[in-house]
Image 1: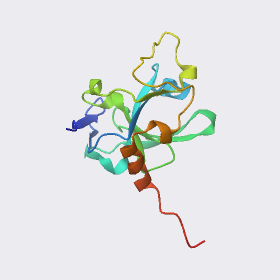
Image 2: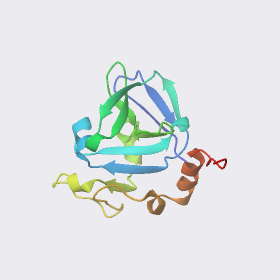
Image 3: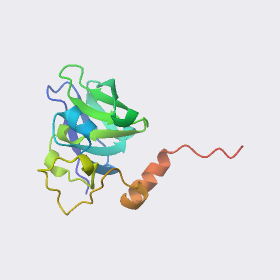
Length: 160
């Protein structure tokens, strides 16, 4: 049975519900995530945008520069400015910030990424693989998540 997950910002103006389990959950140790959160890492639940139901408020997108010239939209509460989720170039997939869940203890990472910049005092558990940079989702994601991701891709143009 799937656990219903809800969350929101610090002031409560933005509230959301995940209508399914995430595709995958990353614990990202990159310098960009450290800088954005003011912490050692961020936990991101990757999920289809249409599976994030807004219950209250509307987070505002903020263009934020990423490492190595990447683009990122961070969706923040317009009142308290807490980052609720991010988008990395693909609007159909959101990276929901695990710390904004009402019960973040119910989430465990499927993988630790960008561990090359992990703070040295953080000990990674053996329960999830760790990668110096990113990983190959085709080998790491569960088959059901790969099928869900495939459904997001536009059909190939066969007229060419």
